[in-house]
Amino acid sequence: MPLYECVLIARNDVTQAQVETVADGITTDLETSGGSVKKREYWGLRSLAYRVKKNRKGHYMLLGLDAQPAFISEMERLLRLNEDVLRFMTIRVDEITEEPSAILSRKSDERERGFRGPKPAGRFESGRKRGFDDREEYRARPEGEGFRAELGAEGE
Image (cartoon, rainbow, N blue to C red; front, side):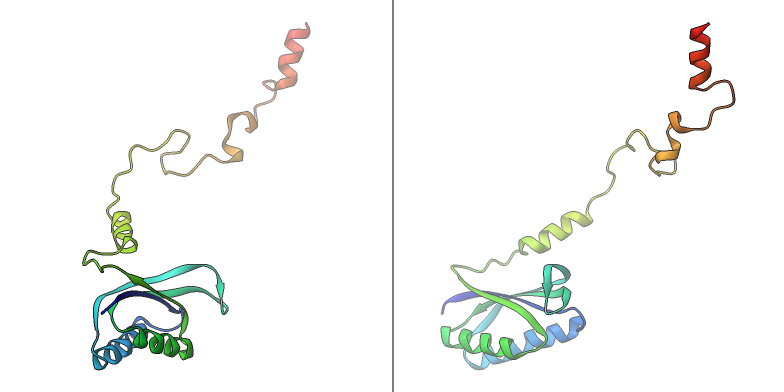
């Protein structure tokens, strides 16, 4: 049977369990038609590039399917009817790898970041950046030390 990968995006106001329920429904329908789910990954609640049906975030789910083309057509029809699913995309692939997808491996790289080196110059000990009022040339100077006092000393 041909192999497919399907990524679906569910609304942000549904729970992760409800997204899993949608994936479970696809799995049970696929198993009754003689196919199988080779890979299943929940990518989490992620920001969308633009608003989709008034949603700024969505739950992402990846499914690796071993199915007949007729089942894929029926699955896509059912996903279009499901009001919790914002978008989906199904593509045919040559193989489904068992290793985590690029999205999940990138997430783990972000979590492993530790020490990032010494603090950059120009910061206070607390880590707060120097602001506009903290620059030396804009601090209030005592009377007689200002720009006019320097001009007066040169003019004499």
